[in-house]
Length: 219
Length: 268
Image 1 (cartoon, each protein chain N blue to C red):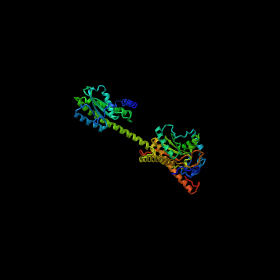
Image 2 (cartoon, each protein chain N blue to C red):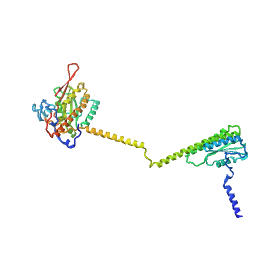
Image 3 (cartoon, chains in turn purple, yellow):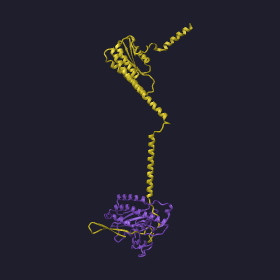
């Protein structure tokens, strides 16, 4: 894996599609879209739709969004420690863990989409962090979890890896041992991010050697 | 006539100037002054032997003075004069016996040579001399007759002073050695060669410090190298959402109807 790139390299912006391997889907109807659109071509869904669907204030995006106190102090300490360790490797990425009881008909993926976009951004720090946020949403009422990522980190993640990681901790989620489950998630996230980094570096190298510039699309 | 008078005056002045030295007899070769031959020959021989041992052992001079009974009160003073005259400034002891004096024998001793001893050492040594004299006096009194007392007194005094002579030698030797170390240390301070052991220790210490420094430097480098920064991308903004386009991962954890097996259902 590579290290910091030099300043000129880092200032350069790449097209997200050059790296992304996960499909773009409509949060409303789950239709796959080929290009970024303002409204879903199938159902017309947009950010306005979701605000209407959830017409209340979105919580502030924090590390722990846990109104019912599922994460004890010991859990938080362990998770914080794991996140610190992760931050030494991937300083840009922020994690948020939300445990909430949703209605059965509410799709956690859509709810996560709403949270990341509707939650207020009131300061430059949040403005910088929001696109690099990975939100793990735990629906305690229905034993469901979802992962939603900000635009900046999204292209580098292989969502299949999140699935495998979360399934590995299935028993913990069912037991409502969310502290241990999230800890497993964070520890596994290092691997997911590492894989993304390696893939990115390979593609950057290919891009240089073949002088492709912004060519090449990836899903 | 004038010259004769001057010489007489000078002679008169000279005699008092020389003090009592004119009265002190010459130092006896065997250390025993017995002008009237009071001591038995057998006892004298024994004492001569003890006196010579003290001289050989510790370079201590021991004298025995036998004075006639009419010596009077001046006997002690005369004994001191004799001891100082014969023993000089070195370590000496003198046994004075005034014939028919119930207080006799009496013991005298001194060490008055200038030394570079400490005050403590000097005081202790002088006290030891007095103890030796007292010890000789005490033990000699246990003998029955005066001749035996003098003989045993001389023997004990010789032993004690002989031992103190060795002590004195030891003190001077130690002091000389201390002076010698100080001197050699002072002269060798500026130009003495550095010991090889010191050089090795310094080198090892420096190597250890360098190793620790390099280790942590490399560790920090490694940790910094482990940091990874994803490149900035122009986001795939969609659905008018400013920060995220949503995700596809949803896991439904279900409890199946088949015993205790739990399965998770993934929706993608």
